Length: 294
Image 1: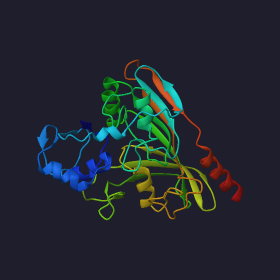
Image 2: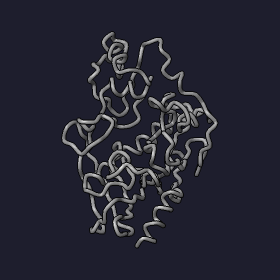
Image 3: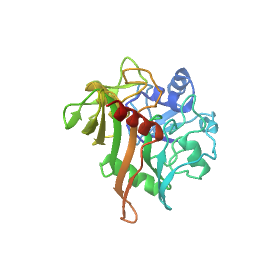
Image 4: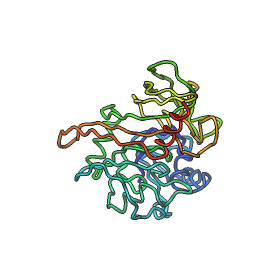
């Protein structure tokens, strides 16, 4: 069984093909034969996958066999019997996808015997994009997975990001309130759209200005896929070196987006967990370069 842990706004056949590493036609065949159910009901391949959907595949293929435990170093900021807070490095894929069945965060979590949820997303409460670094929460048991996922959806987890954007933002603060959905011309990307979209709100404030760039802090009201990257590109200030939404394809310094702060109340102990981590070296080197050019 696969339990959907985030809003995907994606067709069932595309979702399963991407997450299981099989062809879309194979998934469509299984759906047509009634071998795929969502929440115990048969659906069509065009069904839009939703948060908390439970997908069962009655087929003899072992889709999870490709995902194996690997002894991969994790920068653990906090850990107890219920949860972990990790500092994910830029370049690490969170969960397996076609072409990425090893060296992912999931491989590392399986090695640590974290098995709540399903083998494709064990303990994953929320995700960061491959090239986004910073703080993430991981649940270590089913109870915490459910409670933390609910806290995320109810906006009870405060997450702050640092971003270097292309262009000089004149306003000191801003709010971007624009719905996000799957890009109809490129299913691998998201876009501001009124078609099959969901509410998305990003707040930002300027921290430092440079000749052609701006350092900002972002806070999310919602957690849509690629939200910060899509919103900043939408208003004309894309994240520097963003390979999908940026102005160029340069990856000399990597994508300049970092989840530097997280704050929430521990669901069991009631303690306030409040952590900040320094941006990675490539982010700091880019800042130094910009300050020297000023």
